[in-house]
Length: 442
Image 1 (cartoon, rainbow, N blue to C red):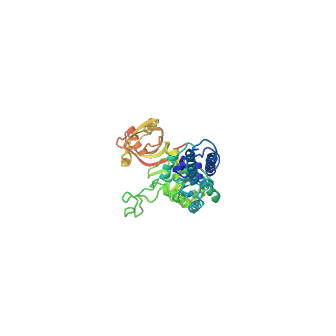
Image 2 (image 1 turned 90 degrees about the horizontal axis):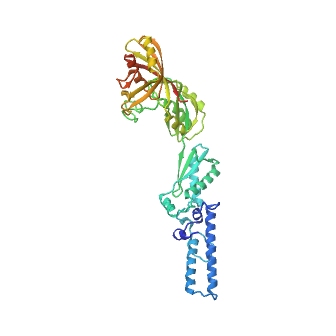
Image 3 (image 1 turned 60 degrees about the vertical axis):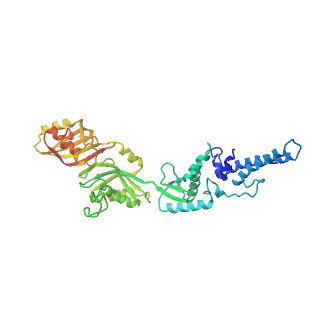
């Protein structure tokens, strides 16, 4: 053991033991005190022997002995000043464990009690089962650790995490969870500051949009950017409500969240319904004070809106968002097509054949070009079915890649989408109504 470090830094027993944390299965305090004691016994025994020999007949020069005694006492003084007051050969030096340059007394009982009290007060507002302590170190302490680092050392934050974790388990009977805790408790023990990082609650399910005219997510007013003005009747919104608001409202009330984020597996236009078994979504409730509610009851409340229905509600994780955001889903649409001229049964039959396994080149539609990059997207139609309504109108069901703009597939969008229904029929056609029948996320 090299006690030279104690010459520059009077590390307390706990901090000195932390330098060798990986070597012996005991507490840092016991390890540090034991190492210091061993060294002190070695030095005191040398000192004793030298004094004994200096009074004998050995051929030693008194100056050499005196120098050796001085060196040993100096090394003992480093140990004494670092808190090993059991040393007999040294007395009268100042010892103050709070002046340890590494821990600065953060493990003292009064300091731990104060931090624990602050933490419990903050936690009292939240429902949780699991937690994790994270220690925030000042830059000066991080730099100090770099200077004194040994191959066997652990950072002081690891020990503080353990210490505070044990105290919190004792006081709350909650469980430490490293992978996905309900709450992360971030503590700066040097400044006695505590803040909580609340893990969001994720609710996943599917939604059906039963009416036209509402967007998927909250749409801020274009004039005031959500602040509220005469144009939006001071609501801050372009549209009165949205799928997001209809679903999130009851959940926010139940979970007592601070804010929310709505994540859908794609989105439909405002004038498009989402039917069938619905579109997958994940609702993220941020900083919830309640973590467990009856999802079925909330679902029933949402379904009474008459505009949106939810189904298959269950608790999810952040991975559910990543899963469907990164994976394109094929879709089945049903469109009401109106043509400028009459369409024959033969033409509809030919249309079905030509649309099957058709590769479509689609430049960003004019209607969304102000908010989407001007690109040419390549998508595929796999299957199409037609059903006549009258001479100029028919239903068109399309099974295709996600991201294909169906309205433009029908109209051609002035040649920006090719081929198109209008081009195949050689008639000007438009989409009058559109529904999403299925999102194929199996």
